[in-house]
Image 1 (cartoon, one colour):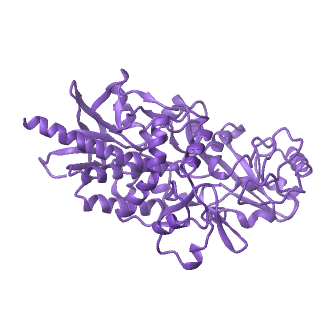
Image 2 (image 1 turned 90 degrees about the vertical axis):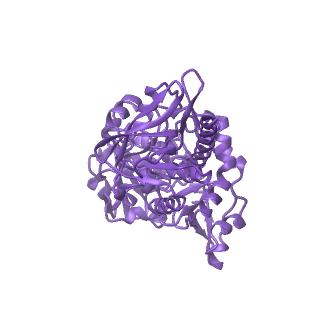
Image 3 (image 1 turned 60 degrees about the vertical axis):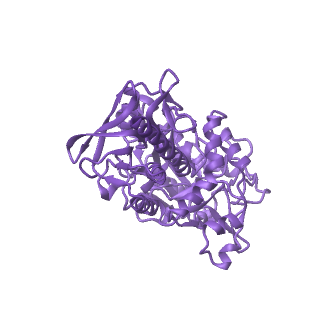
Length: 502
């Protein structure tokens, strides 16, 4: 930031959505300032804690190879399938129980492919997720669940790519810049008040884009909006997403929108740190539960582990774990599926029990009713439809019969030692409540009018996700709506500049 420099657009935030907004605005010749609350070593918001996986529409292998041209000949023979616009629309409708905003959903879906190509044009590299989103079938990788490509280097790689792209585009970047207030008048928003390195500073601009995340790192807000017990949740990502952008926007009359009592929450290492930690966060997710049975402290199953492919249940199952006594559960695996567990189950930071019999396993597991656990396993084993073949790449229909809580797919009796059990709790990723925006990314007020000069992107966009979320849609949404907000804000700033000169 140069003293006295005038800016067309100020972007508040430092993750994927904010960076895409800044780059997009700079492409429109806007003078852009990006204010990242975190210090440089923690930059990137929640993006930095992700796998870098992005859900987008693609036709087949040719589309994947075009985005990831360095694949070997053997890798190119993988079964990438396809993911159509209809697939994406149907997934969004199904997992949100038909509540997703149709206009915003249409932008997300129809812009997803071209946005991925736009990111690649700015230097991002993509690679198929062979280890996490595919299984080998007859010696050939078969992808499942609609999420195929990730950014090389995962979330931190994505952050580094985007900061380099923003710098090349001339975006000024300031770290340790905590934005506390919007400057506004009857004419709309025209700047921010920020603490930069502890010094209160007023910064003017023709337009402001808020892309600084939800409120998942705010213990009080979690309890206020998500409900009792959510103060005890682990935060998977950045400690800086405390709802500041939402609060300052609501303070000037912005309209709240979406599922404010909902969030993305997963099964997470029971004894993880309270906030994301770059050195160990990749070790903490426990998403191979479709091949397990999950039991609570009472020794009872409490959900259908095989209701759907992991990508369509993992973001809501953390909620159910949170509701269990003590806010924890155990995932139990038979040795016949242990080779299918995701890499984080083999990480160094894991609460794990191994035993040669179910009786030994039950005795070793902490804080669980042993007798009821043994009864649960016996009941489950007897209910498995053993005549249906097991297939991890599709919903195989290998379920159970007669249980109060069924397992719909991938039901494997626990009878082949050694057995493994993993302790999990709830890890919150991001909150679903946000601000209402127009199809141009402009924030609306509570009189349903667009607020001049104010735009939003990323986790601050309300109305896309309700109750649940198709895996890997978050980064795509951030990039799509960041790009949209940046372009719209730059065009609006240019119009204001012309008007001021007349």
